[in-house]
Length: 427
Image (cartoon, rainbow, N blue to C red; front, side, top):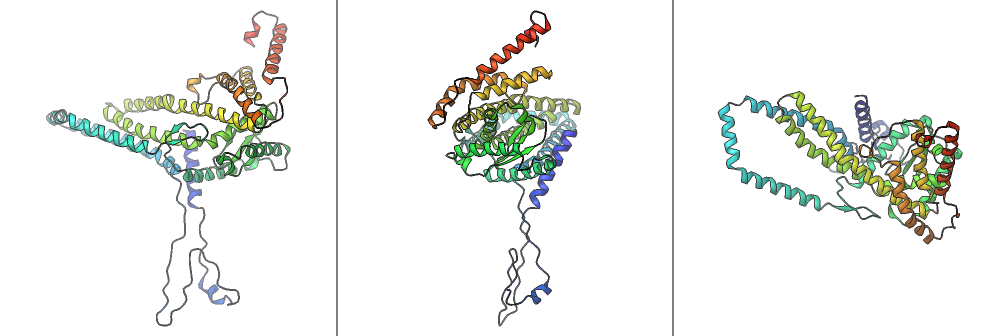
């Protein structure tokens, strides 16, 4: 409940920001127009003009409303999403009560009517499905760099406007925790981001947006990039990486999400799934005999949609961002072999901290182990790309080998200190 209230509060705050942007100034009072000198010229007005007097007719005055920008479509969808769900529940409940209130003979007549017209009704549904499918197929798009086919429902301009509002919210939320631009940590992150942008400027979606850095003083291991190019890095992430090569791999991964428009793609998928879920939710509330069973059916429906659509799709996008992020880091002349080491470090950190790890099929991200294996398979291709970019030669020592030997030595020392066989597996 607390998370739902927090989410709704943020949505309404974004909605308010959307409505209050770019207002035109009010027209000055008439007395200012009379006292303005001719030498100074007429004052500037927003979308208003002072008509010159006609010699034969009184002047006509035209008034326009102040300019207001409408809220972006994704934001309106977020605000209307709970209302749509409630409307589907009420519609299904009303249908159930209406059906239960019918006499038995009326019910039998309606069943016979549907049975006699089952083929025309089936044909109508099939035609509607085909038309919707054709409409969706005409709006298919390809992701840049990978060429994967997807279905975007929101325009890029609308989503960038929503991202600008989101950035304003984050800057307000982190205002007291942002490191100044003169801080060495901020300067280091900014330098790495600019190197990534400069070395990958041949990609249009890298060169067409300005990249700005904001370092947040927070112990969480987190970093993200908004679609408008604002990079947020927590100091916990800076503490977790071992060197600049690991950090540039992380930044490349987050920038890849922006280049591939993953946030808009996820919102489009969520919109399609939610629309289908509304039909299913209406059917659940119409068929279930009691409200309690309908609530339980709706909860099961939400969990199945999360496990079958949202989380697998999120893991798919993470894998794609790992692939493109590694290419961005390779073109920036980073040691891409350090990327898998970072995820191995996180895996060991999670084990030592005793935090329970969810199975991958319950998570929105691949497991650290699978992520490491995926990156290891991509390293040879990334090294070839790095070499083709005329980057300096890498040291012969592989960071992955060094990390593996270090972990093995630590485990052997722990085994000796604990003094019992098989303790390596426990550690």
